[in-house]
Amino acid sequence: MKTFISHKKLNNELRNSEGSLGLVATMGSLHRGHISLIEKATANNTNVIVSIFINPTQFDENQDLRNYPKNLQNDLQLLQNFPNILVYIPEISDLYPKKIKAKNYDFGKLDKIMEGEFRPGHFNGVSTIVEKLFTIFYPDFAYFGEKDFQQVIIIKALVEQQELSTKIISCPTIRENDGLAMSSRNQLLKEGYRKNAAIIHNSLLEAKQLMKSMNPPQLEKTVAAKFFNAEGVDLEYFKVLTNDSLAERKKFNKAEAYRAFIACRIGEVRLIDNIILT
Image (cartoon, rainbow, N blue to C red; front, side, top):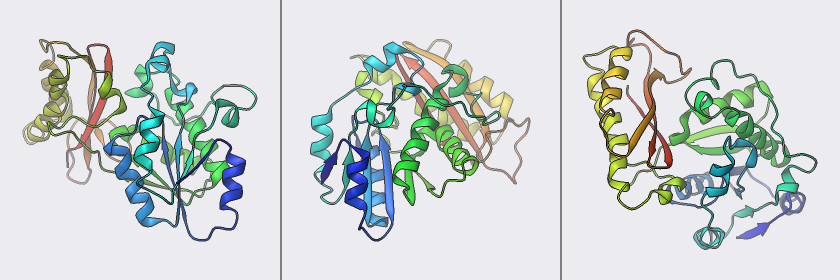
């Protein structure tokens, strides 16, 4: 494992390398979900970059940015299990040399719904940093977890719009024993709230059953109603959309695949999740 704070020095390290380059972009506070991405990247590529950078332009709330969990020492300890990876840990100035500002993108409806609605400007920030990473390192493949499925869809749209050469590889969500999707934010859950979070995955599993007898709007209302009296849980959205285009449908069509999406606040912590329905 080698660490770099400068993308120029990292690129110098790669200058004479042969074989494919994989990228796993993270904001640190690594867990088994991140590790699964790195394992896939190292299995399929000769060279792998793991970036650790808390990107300021994708946070719509300053408090959320300040509270985002950080544990670089633990991250580097975990990454020692991958002796051949290159770890990129830049200062803000290495990626935003002039001004800390996101670009404006047009993704149509993709970034106006769900996370885009509740976190204005979030996907402009995500797309800005992803485009920066893709255009300074030119990875052949980049690996993203499906917990942030809307993000995966938008990054694929970004690659197409900007005519980038990187292929996006989406990887299955890694879960805790009770089904809660692994997230760096889970560690922010206060004592007593952790068990309340089980309702998130349970509601997604229930949606998978209910789709056999309900259309998408009915399913959304039925599942949302389960949260009216849920202790310590505030539902922000529960949506059933097409898997490829995130479109709403009045009825299920056997020719399409569907996915259920959810966002909740468990106490003061905001969590998201999704599950494929068909």
